Image (tube, rainbow, N blue to C red; front, side, top):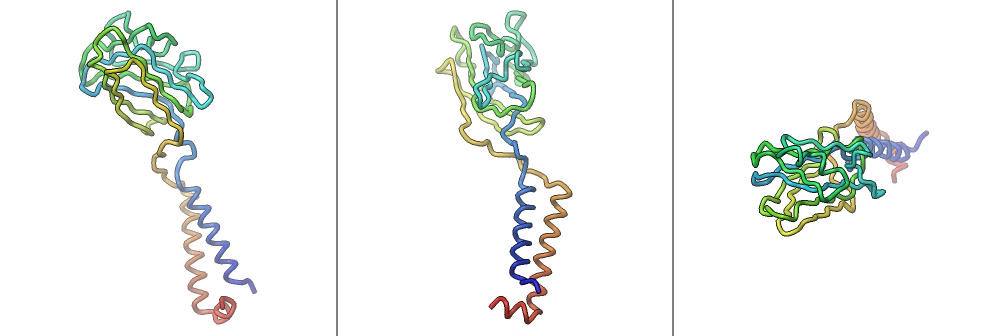
Length: 203
């Protein structure tokens, strides 16, 4: 006869595995785009934005598939593609200081972004430089923060560890495994309560 204690341990291990599988996405730190809005609102202005992966590769560059877009630009000399062309001397400025203005950098794939580098203009208008930004993995926001740059021309944001993952929804197979595990544990506990041999073995 099988020792009920061994069966109970095996079921508990199976249940632990099911819970681990249902915990959430395995790559929550992967990102696909960056969105920036003015916190005031005011004009959006940047000279260069870099998004470095864990190998130090700037995934925002067009050579790696990066694409910068914006709601508007002040003119042909201030277009959004200037923020990810590798030069800190070019300048992007939004056409208006309105709340609807947004600057977006879309990556060429899903990358683990470990460092963000923001460069802004040095010649004037530093009072404008407070921004809210969101990092996305697909349609899910994986990180949000405020960026204050009034007293500096460059700000580096590093993520030394994993970002907090968005809550995951278990797949049907995970649900079935969890329910089966709970049922097995409940059945063993019920059988153990009515089985004199199990009581003797447990003692």
